[in-house]
Length: 209
Image (cartoon, rainbow, N blue to C red; front, side):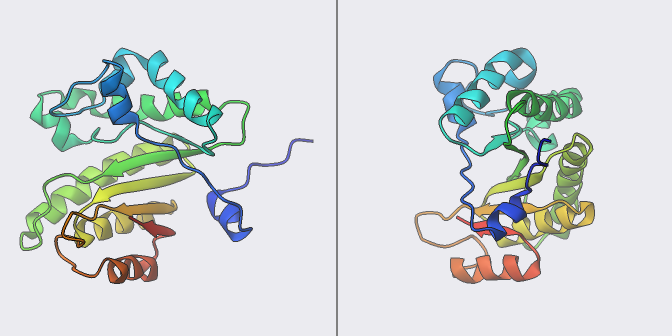
């Protein structure tokens, strides 16, 4: 009888290392399927077989996670290039590709959200807009059956907190990776370790940089 796949938190609670391979965006650029600039992952819809192959390569190289390639696949990025109509199809297809690549393995399936470049600590309207962006992406990811969400490259603790709140609303685990710039700080919190602690105490399941 096949044993059920252990969740991310079950693996971590058992002190099992979970290796997460990523870097899809720059590798797709290197292979000629994605252009610098907006860095929108349209390749998910234009060449799904290429995205699946790269995901398989990550798994064969030792990744325990098949990551959906939705980095920069959010409403603001697609708005900038006039392709908001691709938003939902891109997000859903990316997760389906990750699941197809992981078929027959015990790899975890992770959805992906990231910084929006909209966050302004003093402007609550941007907070509401970002919450809407994350709610769309996380909602589609949960609907497609991801095991958890990766929220990455947040330079603002405040934006990471919005991601945490949205994931909590959907009841899906969240791994947060903060983006520490050359000054060694976040944009709204000089103490990175403190920021990680704040996120962890607030309910983020895994925190890091």
